[in-house]
Amino acid sequence: MSVSLIQKYNVPGPRYTSYPTVPYWEEDQFSEDLWKKTLLESFKESNETEGISLYIHLPFCESLCTFCGCNKRITKLHDVENPYITAVLKEWDIYCDLLPNKPIIKEIHLGGGTPTFFNPKNLESLLNGILLRATKAKDHEFSFEGHPNNTTRTHLQTLYDLGFRRVSFGVQDYSEKVQKAIHREQPFHNVAKVTFWAKEIGYTSVGHDLIFGLPFQTLEDVIDTIDKTKSLLPDRLAFYSYAHVPWIKGNGQRGFKDDDVAKDDVKRQLYEEGKKRLAANNYHEIGMDHFALETDSMYKSFQKQKLHRNFMGYTASKTKLMIGLGISSISDSWYSFSQNEKNIDEYYNRLEKNELPIFRGHILTDEDLIIRKHILKLMCQFTTSWKAKEEYFQEIPEIVKQLQEMETDGLIEISTSSITVTEKGKPFVRNICMAFDLRLKRNAPQTKLFSMTV
Image 1 (cartoon, rainbow, N blue to C red):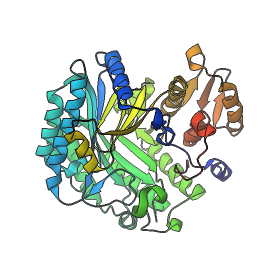
Image 2 (image 1 turned 45 degrees about the vertical axis):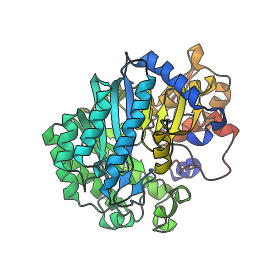
Image 3 (image 1 turned 90 degrees about the vertical axis):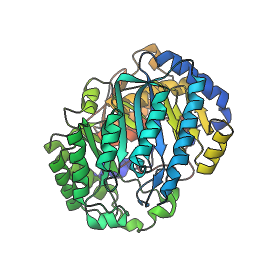
Image 4 (image 1 turned 90 degrees about the horizontal axis):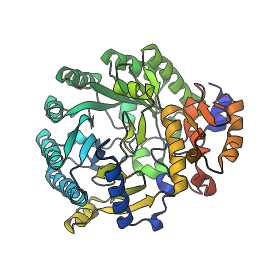
């Protein structure tokens, strides 16, 4: 890839798990009553046809990984498990009491933190409590994130018996020097063990999360990691760019110098060579940062143009309503977003008062809803159009004019009513989406908000 293109387009930008992005939420226009109204509207429109999704945030970790930007609480004391599960189930009860009938759950995702911090029996209690007040969709897809160092066969079997068929393991990189720098030391045999266990038990999609651009990471490290990964044959892979944002993540990312982190063309080489290696091993690029074998549900969904993206990342199917449970979780009714309290004590206090633990949110405007669709299509299908009247908005000509330079650079193809991202342009899809982001354009950030796009 051209170094000049990297230098030209490597600017701070959102990852677009939502539109509007969180820094541009109009919190003063939001209220819990409006959130409940849109929640019920979305539920009535979609529960019987597509079901709903649940994201459950399990925040505890035994140690701090310095690359991580998630909301987490570091502790080795496992007596935190039961009170947290009790609180999450109470939050779920409050939601279920609001709904006019029993929810049909299409997706559940356990994220963290470290979900496998929790004892398998406690996870079973949590899930049984959730399912007690809901119905599983026939084609449900339940997934969780596992840490290779503490995921046991019992974890995998317990969740499998509850209907989970997809698991992703955080690998990052196999270099001992890199692992030490990011405080995530885990030998290859731990990853191999949990991967083989999952396949033996019957999981249909086993994923590995890899990161490029980590401190001290070399091209040889990336190639070695991908070669080791190939030997385990996970069904899908995330190959993320390390987001070096110490101004957001605090001291956890200041355990190494800025100069220890690859930048610009050096970092992009890690991605390009890694991507070539993945393609040679029959992994197909799906959306941004994701790759899958042809047998995986994500690949099939991408081929059918049914891939979806929300606060859980990419999903193989879409639900209009996603309810987030636990601290810092974000819910999405399609018409609005709401986020839970980030502080665990405040989260508990709100629930003790029988209140939903929401502290902020955003009600989408008509303009937001149109732009959201365009950005979602670009992120999931690498194309969008405004042929239909409801897909057009008055700033389209200005956006097309702004994107003409990207067309000259070979990153997109523009027609009279559509834009398509080229193969060359896929690494720059965030930049392309930014052209549609009217809120970002109207109020450019004066401080550092986002990671670099390349």
